[in-house]
Length: 114
Length: 113
Image (cartoon, rainbow over the protein chains, first blue to last red):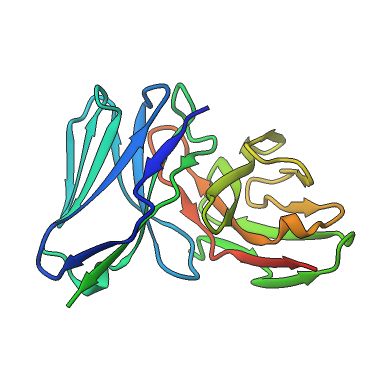
């Protein structure tokens, strides 16, 4: 089965700086990788999906990279704001792709200091 | 659209009791899943369904049953609750092919004493 590692330590970033979160996986190379945001007491909310043949994906202040050689995805938030404070989860599908149940990392708690 | 709805929001059970967590979606999604989230463990897949009448086990299925008689509903049954099932439960749905984004419900916080 796939194992996903995300930095379990909270990440403290000053407002206006770029926050970079890491997601490493250990086994098969996934067909795609997703990033979610989760606020306390709420369900995760989808942010971005990047496919195995894509190096980079952007959406407004968010950027995701996918390096299948390093088995790693990086998630960047530029010009960070206190409202970006949340837990960010990366998720990978089963081998072969599909939508039948994702494997999630434990998440990284991001704190943007004003 | 209401999206994915879950009931109840909170529940306290005694060991050995049974209950059903309800999940419904109004987006006509084929794929639905149940996850549990525990501190330090992240989200873990319990059961999933790729369409009405089709279900399969995830990473942590023991102690849970599911069925999918309609596209809209995917209830999760605890047959004999145990303290180890104390957790927050999330239901999610996805359109599947070409759109793998998962939509999550608000969660059910379950405590088993």
